[in-house]
Length: 379
Image 1 (cartoon, helix red, strand yellow):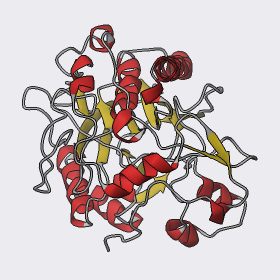
Image 2 (cartoon, helix red, strand yellow):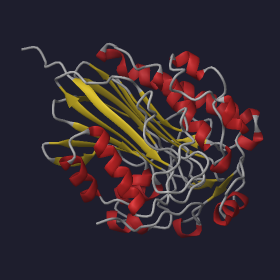
Image 3 (cartoon, helix red, strand yellow):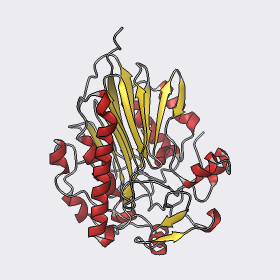
């Protein structure tokens, strides 16, 4: 018996939140590809880093053989990593820029997924929501080795220290990879920490279960994060596995990589780099990343690096991907003011850490986090 033919019905949304001045997340949703990247680097690189990742991966949104999926994803992610390294080496102001990345590529009823960083992928199947990615964070390492409980990890002062990312250093990219079957009725969620950092797992699950339309569901998830204070950029991509055709297969690009990246937050605050609903001409979703994020070198040595800085995707990506109507023209990103509405706490974080260097971390309590995220969650 031949497998059932399936397609993806998708939506992407993003919002800058109620605190941050710019959106450093980027998201992409298409008939064969889902991507979420959460850039880091403070006001000097995060939006560029996530845009570069999306631009390289967007070229893959086409029909492929299932045997080639993982190789294609590895190649695109590796190319994005190499470009970020080149940019940071060419411009000292961009030292330390990087991004998380989750990408899901479909061929027929097969899905290949690669993941690096602390953005998450969830699968809703049979009424149960499961987190299918493992955070590449210091506290997750402590949880995995039995030194912390999940409840303690949520309040740990170093919960935002990540161990792996694209572009952060010139070491080999370490991806988590998996191959899965796409079953009709499955619902996938890709989310930045601006969502799951303030909205509980139970509330996310209830929303995914009860709101059937992917676009309305993504909207509701964004609003939940804003109601919880919106301390960070929040981005989500929702995709349903269906057997009937999708009414609109137009790709959606959101966040820093999108042409409408300057849209105002739906929370009522206006500012540079704020994203919202998809553009009227093309559906799109937006995402952004918060303050500069600090990271340790790969285990077992725990070391922390300087606050991330922001880079811009220079010319060529939109043309290579064939998405000139969706992807941002990279050059204007650099012309945006880089110091506008920077909070005192963020500025202090950038001064505290040297972007080009690493400082040894002898124990967890001695490593003060360069970004904070409220532990408050919605019910």
